[in-house]
Image (cartoon, rainbow, N blue to C red; front, top):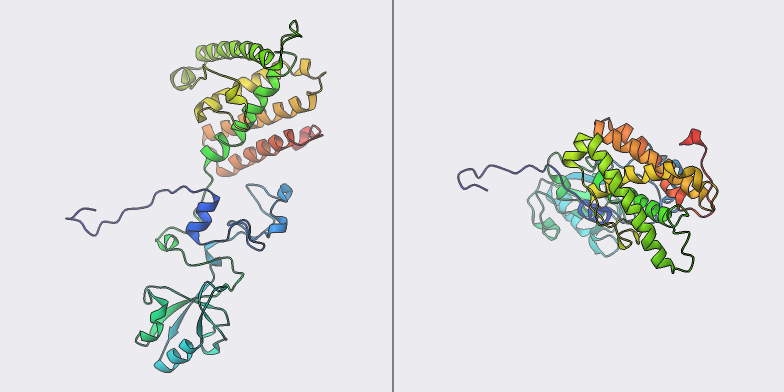
Length: 340
């Protein structure tokens, strides 16, 4: 802050948080709560994993909005009301603070409502020392309420529980897309297309290394062709020149987001080229699903690049994620093309 301009206040443009950090900073319940596991809607824990009826565009459960915050501002008009109200306040472990042990109808308060710190009452223990009339805040959610406490962060003008959005970098490039590319590369390397047929006596690790050399050579050729045909890629494309088995061994690809994004086109290109040859193998269903998922992922990338409305992004992302999930389901069947 500048000494000459002490009235200048910084503006919050953006803040990033994962699920645990978001619920902590907003004073919400965690996903282990039976009644309120989700910070975005009113689903309960028993239905939290029933993702079949959920999408990024719609939800079968009402959304949790800023207006859902459970708090009640009351005015304590005189000393008598203050004394009567003070006599009902008790510290409660289950109530997480100083709560009413009985209802107080004159102010519309019920048993269990918790006295909250506020602008006029920074310390709830000083309730009896305030000069009437004054206003105070009671949390009315109860023991099983969604909100644990008022969030100072959400008291900043313009910041609310409604102003959240999806972080595409972590939810897409470092999430399903990274997992998809790693899984697809492992599938290709283990397929008859890339496994050395004339070296049956080789151990699996050595055979995989030879298959990787074959795939890596095709990757370099793919990059070369793309640089020749795509000026934008030639200037800004991020290429992987050291693809190793270690990079694709885990659930997620060990690469930068831009490198993962660049590998998507290569993977889909290879799957499409060898789809007929792989149709007669035991991995036929998995390869078909991978090709469908890759096509949906490329559609989603095109939507992002074109700057289309959020609804379009959500539709393509839902399609890609849904088909990526089906790839890992045991005994899965290829989905109906009309549903893709």
